[in-house]
Length: 350
Image (cartoon, rainbow, N blue to C red; front, side, top):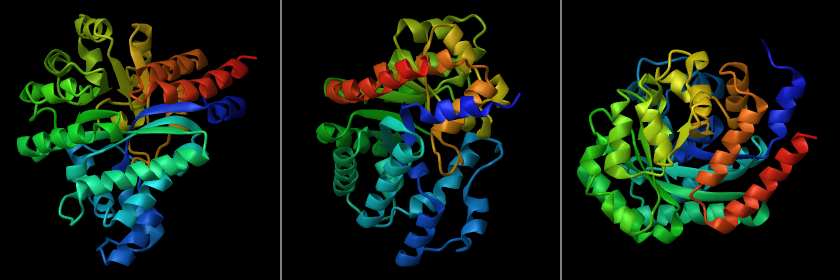
């Protein structure tokens, strides 16, 4: 049944919090074209409408690995410090203006983003951080950076990325392990994460997006994360033991419904376990993952959650509170964002 306009407007008007968004998935098509022209980069086409057909994923692919190949054009766009600044600003602008997001955690993989380019990791991080700071100074908006280690780039890359994060821990709020979990399981990084824990850097891990629910068990037991990205395979454990481990460990699941549909992590939006997770008492948030490439945004994710997965408006508010509670941002920023969000939640009930 289609949503009524009142519900749609209500969702758009909500102040929101998002914990799982990749900067590399936030590059707009016009920006891709502008940067390509300026830096003489190759594109399949410089026609905006035609490039959008190639660049944006609108129907399911066969696997996560196929979807990751879609990021090659976006990755090439991080061609200069000026380009990094523009992409970051536009990501913040869209989140704030179009999606009504008050609290955002923006993550990126320095080795993926900057691979093959003569750009320094630290200077790139400084550019992203300073762009966020300037935006925060002019808007009622709070944002933090999560550094990603790309598993498929090998152990040397992972260790380099961990050292980079620890060295720059004052500029970031958390750390993530992403991409191919099946071939690069969490147990590989058991010793490596000790540096992160010792430095007091919170951990989130892409886990249970593909493969088997046992991967989530391994991730929690071996790495000790505070959050799990995606985690849909938790629902495959009919004994409920995996969900109970997630719950008893205090782990929050960062769900990304539309992304999970496009990567074939779930067969359909209707079968996404988001509602099941909430009914089981798990802590969950809702995110858009890679909004430009996946042609989504947080408003769309909330609408899908209500229309397709059966969430009530109270369920949405629950996921918002979970996001606030689980955010890695400093307490002062979380409190300011929470005041905005909780105020809107209060008025939405009147």
